Length: 231
Image (tube, rainbow, N blue to C red; front, side):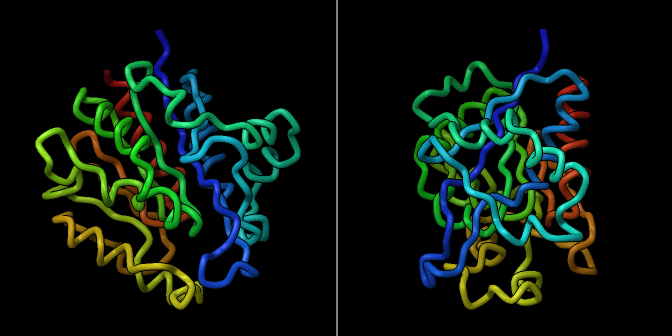
């Protein structure tokens, strides 16, 4: 029986502080994972906090971020249709999935943390021994997730994600609603990052797999796939 993975994307298309500044899903963070999981025959479902459309981050559609994988997805009407009608958490039975994988883009900072539906699914998959993965800003989806005993899922665990230094270098530090690197550590996580910004970096702690930035998407998904292959 093939493994089943739930891929999480955003519904947000602009920054709250400046609605004229667009954002959305960082496309390659989805496509790199989707390609790797598809090669292994895993079944994949895309979900978002509200269900429905997931907009694309315009900067992810420019080189060097707009690579072969992202371009192939955007040029495929069937693939793009998957982002027009994503599932909502209420439509998802966590028992059907072996893993949940949070994609990024600054937009997720606004709608991932407050989704109690995603928190429920993540908790249930994690406590059942399933894999929880996140790349770049995807770890915003873990910051408020608690386990059945009330503790934070990330407490005491090694992880990584988009760093504050990378926010500054990306020139969005004045637009983002909070410092996620700082906030995740306030939840008790053991956060680490690569010495250089924007290089690939992924961390595995048991059944939690996290990647630091868009350049970590392939490495992160590969590590998630390896854990699933061994089950």
